Length: 464
Image 1 (cartoon, rainbow, N blue to C red):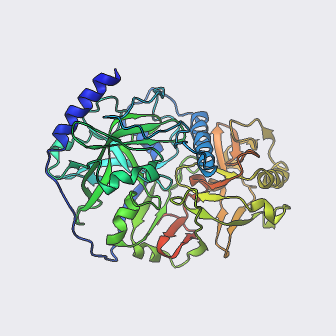
Image 2: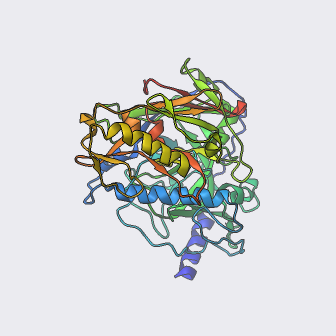
Image 3: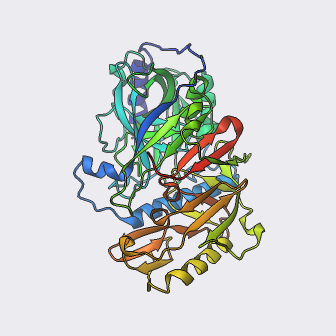
């Protein structure tokens, strides 16, 4: 089966590499800000008929695998890829078929966010998950030699774009794949085309051709040159999105590729997802330096660099308060690598910090609500619905410099089943000594990444 796939793969490469080449020579820097509408991926459920119910347990399992992957990468284990499998730089003519099981019900468990982008000439628009923890962007492409999951948009067909081309193995972008994806690229002996492998902590992966085309963010804006993966084998929990847009601080990420044109900054506001049925379902993603001026109330904290994971965004969490009172833990308990990540749903805290947070939260909540059995990673639960809970203490996460996230009810509680509501924060195992600020706690805050000046800001007030 691998031999057959490689022969078909190589034949397609020969066709793809003969298409028209496109180069973007416009390196002019402007202060224009591109703003896209941002939605929670759960909304894609209504776009196609689904016979599978949404299960929080699946979402939490996927979330936990991502956290384990981040910890593994921070541990800097040699030869470990994003998926936790051993990688090698074997010079095969095409990619290997990865021994990862196909998972059905791909839309189950999605807790991420998506935007629409245009690709190719003429531009066709696709639904893409936004991920600050990913570098390489990719989307599913015809002819899907191995597998493409069900998506809401028609599949991208490279042959219909006048500006599509594959990139050769000799290109600098191909050489950058190892640092961007933690997987060595492969090369086609027949065409010299570069083949990427992007793998993820939940065992999902995408394999295909490293490609270049034009990216259109809005119809009124001139398109930009864009390097991305054209996926021919895409398996795992990607929901019904066409692919992933990488916003990490890496030369192959969409953010970095657009920075010369718009500036080294971006911001977003994530709309609510599960616990606020009457709230706005639309947020935004803005790319460009002037996006930092979208709110005058930003409070900033330094962005930190971690040499083991230089593409990710690290912060310094210094204090957590419950109902205005700091947790009774030593300041050293917070001294662990802390990542802010749009692709992790539930915030993880060092075990000592989480234990103190749980105790303080339960002390107040249990005066009015009976405790309930937890689910998966969530073990602080109560009987009752979110909409009926009026006595919910405010949790505030405070970062170096005074910036903070004062969490409201929709950032704090999640109703995992009718009449059972849990604290939407979990503890990291003692051996997994990291902290992650997940997207659930970021909802309805404006979050600004001023990468040029190494700081990130938060502003409350919703996604208006």
